[in-house]
Structure formats: structure tokens, C-alpha cells
Length: 342
Image (cartoon, rainbow, N blue to C red; front, side, top):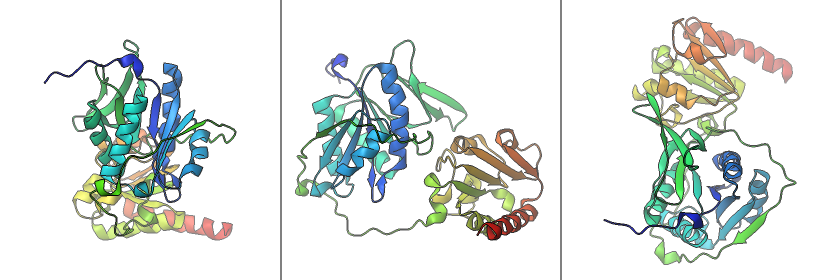
């Protein structure tokens, strides 16, 4: 089917969808504002954050502090909680009215639901689960980089013929910016045209199934286990060390596939992307899919009895030995240190 040509010059500026959580802006939205600032500067355009919800205008200061020039703010009682119908309609209306050139959306549960629906509504493409963003030197378009073929190569994609250029980015791929609360900007308030009857789903209750030990995207310390633990019962050693350090518990795909840990703990290309200050890889060999999920970690500490394991090539510190013997020793030493500090 033929589609009408669009005037690409009318599409300007970089937008970042900033999810509004109960405790403030979602981390990935702030991370994308940092990267979006770089894109906007390179393109000579403005950076805008998009806030959708109810009673969230106060979050604008966080968006400006993270680098935005503008905030598009849509508030309505019907938008107090995320819904596919409501948020898709609102975002689509914003795009058609203000014609952004680029849209960045976090690859969260809501973002992965929202982004493809928006792209379909406005007739553009979407590059999912990006791990890198840049400007293509030949075209001046956004170069979206993502893993392909099971993570064995990286593909770079440009959207030549349609606008806006859209992509989702996993949490923790980029670092949060240092907030500058002296920054201010323009708040563009937009009335919602969505009616309650147009939203086909209704939120009945919120059930929290994830404890602090699996809040991986925001954890400063993560202790992860793999098949080297030999059996699921030995994950107790991982959990004990994580508890002493005040960290979260992660797992490799092999451990999750074996049923040793629920999928919410999985780290890697097919799990969660993380960027903690310290990442412990315990009994994890270091397949490329797992390494893709921990690339943003500040420090990687690996424990493996195979001295040739690929994880050691990426680790900042490595311990060659039996993880079942080393973990209790580490836990005991960190417990001593904590007792002295406390």
C-alpha cells in the first residue's frame, strides 16, 4: 500500500518519555534525558520531556534538572495510572500536534507496550532494545544500535523515510545525569482528549511481587549466580552475600532456565540490563548475552573456577576458585566490616 510522502523538515526536536512513578520519575527516563541531550545538541534542536499522569507537574523540575528545555505535560484523572488505550491516544495526539523528530522511550513493561502502538498509529518505525545511540555521519539521522542474531553482532539502524524516528532503550544502558536544579524551561500544558469510557481496562489493585532483592535496575550492588552454583539450594549463598551488602540478587539465563530463580532475577540480553556500582558474577562463565546486560556496571567482580572463563576478560577483579567455598568467606569478611562500621 502506498503512503503519502511526509515533510520531514516539519519534524523537529528530541522527545523523551519520562514515566512518572509513585516516588518520582522513572530512572530510565532520566537516563534517556542525558543521552537525549547529546542527540539534541548534535542536531541543533531542543530536548523535551513528556510527562503523562495526574498531579505530576512537580516532576517537571526533575526533568529540567536532567537536561530538558521543555516539558509536555498532560494531566487528567483518567491518566492517573498507565493504560494502553489512554496513554497511546494521548501520546499520538501530542506527536500529530507538535511533530517531534526523535522519540526515546524506556524499554520497561509499560514502555514496551506503549512504543509499538504509537509507532503503528503514526506510521513510523521503531528500533527496540537499543544499547547505543548516535548520529549517522552520512544522513544526519539517529543511528540506533541494538544486538542482533542472539547478541552475536550489533546492528545499526536508521529510519530514513518516516517520522518521528523512534526507539526503546533498556534501563541502565546509560548513566543518569548529575542533576542541575538551577536549570529551568518551558512547561507546555496539553489538555487530554481521552474519555474514561474509551479506556477498556480498569486498574483494580496493585500487587507488589518484587522485593528489594530483585529491584535490579536501581540497585547499587548486585550479586548474581549462575550454573556454577551446581544446584538451586546454593543460591542461599548468593542471597546471604547480597543481604550483608544491601544489594539485589541476580541470575544468569542458565540458572533461570534451570528453574533455580524466577525470570524477574534474570540479567542479560534476554533479561534485565543493569548498571550497578558493583556487580558480583558468581559461577557465571560470561556468555556474550550476559555480558551485554552488565556492560554499564562500574566494577565487575568475577568468581569462577575456570581461569579461562570469558567473564574474566570483562572483570575488574577476578577470583579463580570454587564459588561454593569463596562466597561464605566473602560474606564473613563483609559481615565483620559491617559490624565495625555500624
